[in-house]
Amino acid sequence: MIRYLIFFVTLTRLSGQVEVVILHEKVGSEIDIHENRFYRIFPDVENFLNAQISKLKIPSEGYLSYDEKRYKIKITIKSPSGKKSTIKRIISQKEFNEMSYHVNEQEIFTEKRKIEMYEGMDYLRSEKIVSSIPKPQFVKLKHGNKRGVLKGTLTMFENNILHIQTPTTIEKISLSDLDFLSYRDTIKIYPRLRFYTYGFTSFVGLLSARRFNNQRELLYNKNNIPRKDIFAYTQIMGIVIGLIFSSEVFDAMSTLLTPTKSIILSKSAYEEKNYK
Image (cartoon, rainbow, N blue to C red; front, side, top):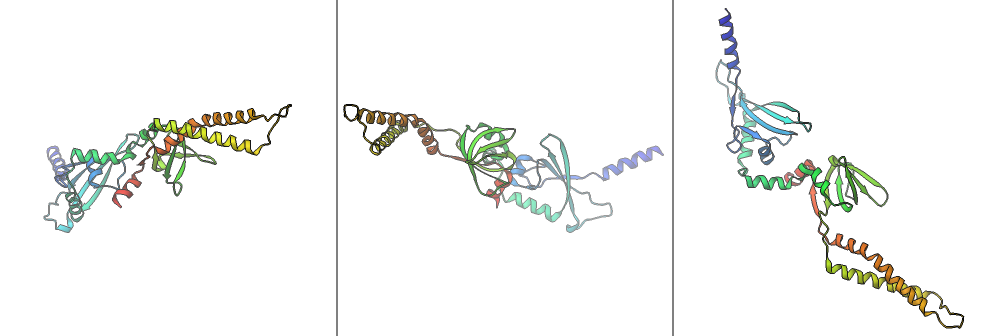
């Protein structure tokens, strides 16, 4: 009796087995995370790790029609904390064919295509990118909590929070809410510009001092001789003040002349730009 029971249980398990099928030869029997990102087979699944498709076994009583055929999709996901879980879906033959056709219409996923794909997915390494940005510097950004573009000086990035100094306040924005960021990864130095900047600020200081002298009354000493030395002193001080501010002006000019780099730091913004 026990022997028959063991045989029955074994037979039941075998009948419950499913046949693994290949969606398309471009992806093989298991769809990994890179193939899914390239072919966008399951774009709605967050934290996708891999997937496998199986054909549900035909019942013992006979044949299944086209409309009755079903496939089971087993999707493994991995949360940011590292915990794995499984999502199961049942699809029809029609849905399976549509997915296969979707993959077939696209190019073959090569190592070159993989590199090109990840070059545009800055949101996958957003924390590293923002951490490496020279600070403080003027940035432009767009995030989900506000409409339009926010402009200000990025002063600090800590605990995935960006501190943006605006003319009126300090905005604290979570990196997870960030969609778009425009910044300068390096500030180019223009040696020739430094010479012209120093000359320009000195000249502005001199002109300002001369204008000041023209607006003040002429002073005389006790011998009734004009104190032109005071005028000369004022002009020298104007030149000196201009030179003091020349470094700030030079830094500002160098920053403005350095090309900006724009990156997309959210999956939704990336898909909106590339697939909509």
